[in-house]
Amino acid sequence: MAHRRLTTAQAVIEFLKVQYSESDGRRERLIGGMFGIFGHGNVAGIGQALDECGEGMPFFQPKNEQAMVHTALGYTKAMNRRAVLACSASIGPGSTNMLTGAATATINRLPVLLLPSDTFAHRRPGNVLQELEHPSEYDATVNDAFRPLSRFFDRIARPEQILASLPEAMRVLTDPAETGAVTVSLAQDVQGEAFDVPESFLRKRVWTVRRLAPDQADIRNVVQIITASERPLIVAGGGVRYAEADAALVAFSKTFGIPVMETFAGKGVSHGTALSLGGGGTTGTGAAAAIARSADCIIAVGSRLTDFTTASRSVFEQARRFVGINVNASDAHKLGAVPVVGDARLALEALHAGLAERNYGTSRAYRDEVAGTIDAWWDTYRQSIQAKPDEKMSQGAIIGHINRAAEAGDVVVAAAGTPPGEIMKAWDNANGSQCFIEFGFSCMGHEIPAGLGVALARRNAGHVYVVIGDGTYLMGPTEIVTAAQERAKFTTIVIVNSGYQCIRALQEATTGTDNFGNEFRRRTDNARSLDGAYIDVDYAANARSMGADTFEAHTPEELDEALAAARAVEGPSVVVVHARERESSAGSGLWWDLGVAEASSLERTKQAYERFVEGRARQKTLV
Image (cartoon, one colour):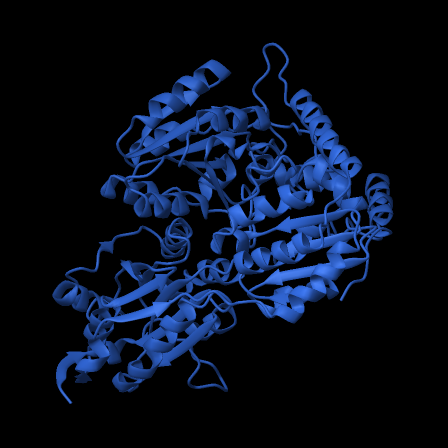
């Protein structure tokens, strides 16, 4: 057998360069590039290998290790999970900075390859810089923190171990049911150790992203359940998008008259059916809430059914049966559902055929009720975001202006705070745009890096809009510098409302407190809390200093002009728009379970707890 003499790091790079994915006959480079911040733990290993062997492996220079993982997640979303980015970090804080990104990836079922560096395997130098010295587990390192956050974890302590580890890592990356963060921890000394690498290890490999066909007995069972229902409701999650089952979902809804509510990850997948209720759950539309309350059969397709979707299991009040369609068996069984374990598109097509044979369809009265509920909701919502003369714009109005500026092929990115909720309620995908909302982990700081990742994956496609509040902007704007380096074209809209207003509103609802630690205010003399005037931050100047073209808007007309100008920029742009500090648009009216204080000397907190208990009475125990 032929061999090549390579270091472990060189072998890793040579292996990653020849990995491909194949889905429905389409072949992609599986590892589209590598992000890395170098330190003493990887500069002499992975860094040297990229320099010598990196031809064909694009290298990107991020500014924060957590951010580079978020960038990779935006990239893989844009590639529909058929391609991923690798992320290299040095030992110690460089690697642990990636932990939040790993959790975001695994919770959202998004593939990313993490290559954190580790301390010496041979231990000759004794305890070293940035090493964790555990009193009873001498082999423990900070990288063990990746274990519960990863779908696959391995620590490489000998060069030969990569021969088994890396192929298994690729298998997990390309398995729709298992995918998430894949972590291969590389000891810094082992990275530079040389060994004879079999040529067969370095040959091109193609990993098939398989569509799992559902069991026909399960299909027949579910056909009977749906046929017996009068008010079925589809909950469409991210699995619909990743299975490219949008068209099958719309056809299913239109043919059988079944309304669809979307999760955060599934936002936009039901565009094309008149029975689309838009975003559902706690931050969804009032229309979705009303229909969900009275539905007798819930058909969850590609959804993890989290508490925001189910309103902490309080919204499906009349549902007698649940159906779970998911490639992941655990998700398919949630809420005590009758499971269909398989690919969303194949399952919907099989159910379509089975229901058509039985001439199933919901009643005209039910369809008319759904349509009327949708129309009434939109009237209520539009009224709630209208501004009075001389007032600042509401966040809902701002989202509407961005929506109207978007064109076919454009993408809007959001993750935490108020913007995801407004997009869930009000974004209209009829213009051919897409919504990439990360709310599985609801990670502040995800948005700008993710927008960069989408832009890198879609350089010649539509425009990317990142929508964030000023609180999120302050958490991590530095990938704007990376975007300037790469001439990556996307627009970040910073909605300035002087704080974490989403949580301030939640604080008021659950404690009765007007504001404690959630607004950006100055401290007054001898004050216990920050209760002075709002602090003024020049976000445009800050973004401009990092290489972005910047625009500022106070009025609807200025916002429209700024969005048009930003679209023409060749590189990153930032639009700073000033919104009302405290405002809320029409919501779903649904409940959310929180740790509300049961005992308090404050009357306002006692009243908040009473309201919480009223909501809890509707919560159902489902298994």
